[in-house]
Amino acid sequence: MGKHDGKVAIVTGGGGGIGAAVCEVFAREGASIRGFSPNPGRLAYCAAKAAVLMMAKVTAGEWAPYGVRVNAVAPGVERTPMWTRDVALGLFDEQEYLDLIPAHRLGDPEEVGQLCSYLASDDAGYITGACITIDGGLTSIPAG
Image (cartoon, rainbow, N blue to C red; front, top):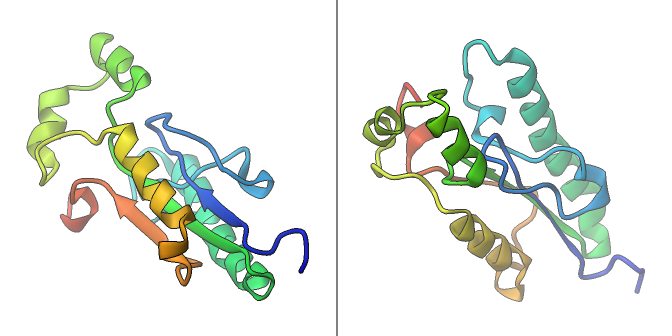
C-alpha cells in the first residue's frame, strides 16, 4: 500500500468564507457554485472556481488507482461571519437572497461540514470526481 491509500480530498470553500481545501493541491482555492453558474461582473472569480472543479475531476482520475478519492463541494450563500458583516455594511440585502433561494434560507456552514464528513466516510467510498452542490436550490433556477 502507498502512503496515500485510503485518503480522501474534499475541495470546499467559496465566497461565503466557509473553508479551504483539505488537501495541499487545493490549499489556496475552494470550489463554489460560481464554478458552473455565472455571476456577471465576477469573471476572474468564476473562472478560478471553474478551474478548481476541473482540478478536482482530473486529480480524482489520477489518484483513484491509489485509493485516493477527490470530490468538490460547491456551497451557495452561507450564513458566515463574513456574510453577516457584509449585510451589516449594506453590501447585500439578505431578504433579497432569501426571496431568491428556492429553500428561502441561507446555508449553515455546519451543513457543509456534515456533507464533507459524509464524503470522507467509508459510506461514500465509491464517490470520486464529483462536485456536490449545497445551495438550497439556487443553481436550479435561471437567476441562480
